[in-house]
Every structure is written in structure tokens, then in C-alpha cells.
Length: 118
Length: 113
Image (tube, rainbow over all chains, first blue to last red):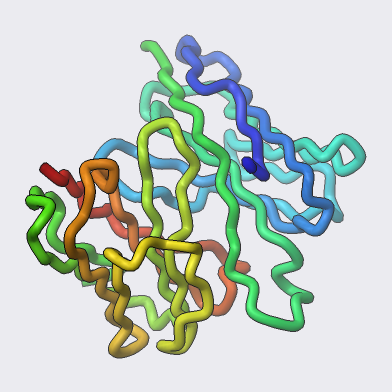
């Protein structure tokens, strides 16, 4: 059972365009939603993260939009550049700050391969 | 060195071989993880160690055996693997449960022949 559904599987965008990747989840206990970026030959690296008490978080050209009622969150990359070409993973984790016990189950989506053409 | 270092980067092994993957973190983190990454599948959590104690074992076959001798080192011992075990094996570390994110190594690309 896939707990975090990510789409699209692949995305091609022209330089300067907006890249949008979407994720949906079912588990209402999730309350930490990071995005990871992975370049070929490298491990994933944390890009940006959000908690559901805010609807949007922006860091430079990267923005997470969060819709708690729809249980959806998305990554927007503004002014996309060829250097942004990578695989992007959304993820979710339940109750990181308030868990009374062991909680190490960061659940990842399947990933989106983004290609930004020059 | 800084970050999370994994060795070897590439490994080809026969189904009857025994090999080990090594991970070392230089970040002072107290939790370490093994993930399996296969094409077109989500990253699969295999094992978690917190303060050198295994806290998660995600129904991984016994042909994979983890070892965490201290908070900086993590091993994955492999024996009698199957071709479907071919994948990228990623090590990660975090401080606590990862509220500030996980730091991943570059992975070991494993091919079982």
C-alpha cells in the first residue's frame, strides 16, 4: 500500500518555466512533509519541508503549497533552470515532534524525474 | 571528510557470495538508516538504528543483516542474495527522528548475478 502518491512520474519543462509536482496522502497522522532532490549518482538531499500549520512555504525559487483538507501538497519550482534537472521525492512522517515513542518512518513517494530544457 | 560516506560505490556479487556495505557519518547524528532504492518504486526503509539500538526492521529478508557498532558506523552484511536484490542501497543519518531532515550518502549500486 503506497501511503504517499506522487505525480507526475516525469516532467519536461522549458528553462524559465514553472515546474509543479504533486503529492497526496491518506494518513491523517502525517504532519511533516519534506521534499528531497536527487541528482544522478548522489543520494537524496533535503530541499524544503513544511508542517501543516502553514499553507505555503517559500525558499528562493522553491515553494511548497499545502492543502490539509484535501490531503495534498505540491512543490513549485519557479524560473526552472537546467541545473534543477533531477529526481524529486515528496515524503511524509507522522507526528515527528509530538510522538511519545520511536517514530522513524519517513514515507517517500515514487519520485518525479524533472528535465529542464535549455 | 564530512557528511555520510558509503563504500563501495559499486558492487557486483554472485548469489553465493558474502559481502558487506559500509556507511560512516561525520555529522554527530544519533540515528542511522538503510534504504533500498529500486527503479520506479518508492525508497524502501529497511533498518533504523537509534543510539546503536535497532528500532525498525521493515520485514527485510534475513539474507540482509545490519550491524551498528557505534553511532558513526553502520554495516549491511549480505549473503545468498537474489537477482531481485539488485538496487541502490542508501545509508542515511539524522539527529533524533529527523525533524531537520535526513542526510543521505551517495549509495552503493549493487548488482547480483
